[in-house]
Amino acid sequence: MTQSTSAPVTAFLRHHYRHFNAAALIDAADGYIRHLEAGNKMMITLAGAMSTAELGLSLAEMIRQDKVHAITCTGANLEEDIYNLVAHDHYERVPNYRDLTPADEQKLLEKHFNRVTDTCIPEAEAIRRIEKAILDEWTAADQAGESFFPHEFMYRILLSGKLEEFYQIDPKNSWMLAAAQKNLPIIVPGWEDSTTGNIFASHVIDGNIKNVHTVKGGIQYMMYLAEHYTEVTKDSTMGFFQIGGGIAGDFPICVVPMLHQDLQRTEVPLWGYFCQISDSTTSYGSYSGAVPNEKITWGKLGIETPKYIIESDASIVAPLVFAIVLGQ
Image (cartoon, rainbow, N blue to C red; front, top):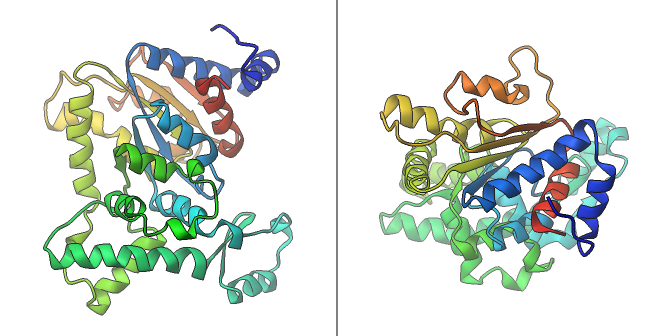
């Protein structure tokens, strides 16, 4: 790979990151670039609380520059990027979070703060503000007998402009807004395990929403992904860049063996690139820490698939990989 003096971050990384996990980062980034340069597509999967870590600062530009073509994320990441968009100034950072006592945590609760590691999300300005906007969309769809995916409802409230008056960050740093403007395919397995999912359940229980299927669920997401993957890979392959573990990574990667083994679509290619950023230890059934080769036995990756694993903190690693891919 050529190195440009106009890309200071990349130049620094290529000079200093030469061994161990540092070298794996460079290798994975170069593999990502080669994958795209060959005309292929890339899916990024987001576990944990990467949106609250403000990954949008780099991911949004990746979306705008067509360096990512689909995203699978947890419901938390879907909503928390929008929370940050409309309530950033009301967040409270707790640098000494490791020293908090149960009494300290109780005080945060009484202030209506929800803590994610060192960052506290304000309930009123973030969660309830989004609830009001999305409830209107849920109700309208419910009354019309329509149903949509969780990310489609989020796209509606973002593209409607009804939240613009509340923006507290530069909107170019919201990956969800960038995705909405591109109508990027998003898969959100287990959306029910999120604050917005809990809120939806409460409105169904209260009778405000009559049909629980107004918001589509995980099986429908897998069906959607199966058709999307089949179509996209007719002329190219899809890569898999996994940030963290859990359902955000486990759910979408299984679409390939399902297509091959259950639908007999054997012409569909395997994933064409694989990289995982993980700090999970491979032991006692920790699938999130499983080395990529194990996925060969499940029909997800092939012998020749470029495979990388970076054993480090995703909040540090992912922006650096994206900087190289973006030529920064």
